[in-house]
Image (cartoon, rainbow, N blue to C red):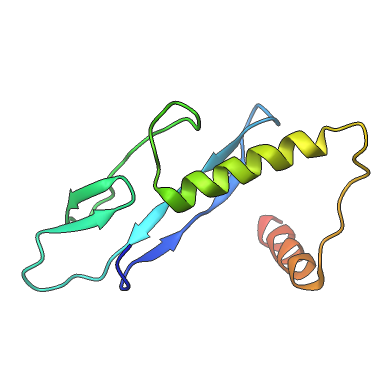
Length: 108
């Protein structure tokens, strides 16, 4: 992952299945004179001004890059834990509560 790269990992609920979500992995690069390709989490790609679309379903054997794969594996474990009979919900720390409220307001 080059230092000038900016990664954004937005998620949103799946429109019909509450057991799924839509996970996007955006990699943004500034234009550099003479640069023909960039290193992405899924390998080198030509530098273009439009998006490179790569679709994957977690667990299908296609890596989305180390960080995204790690985040997805943690999310899978968390989802299983929330379905546990012993789960009584969760408590968010202060900063996370503020982010949750921000996203609620943004959705509204």
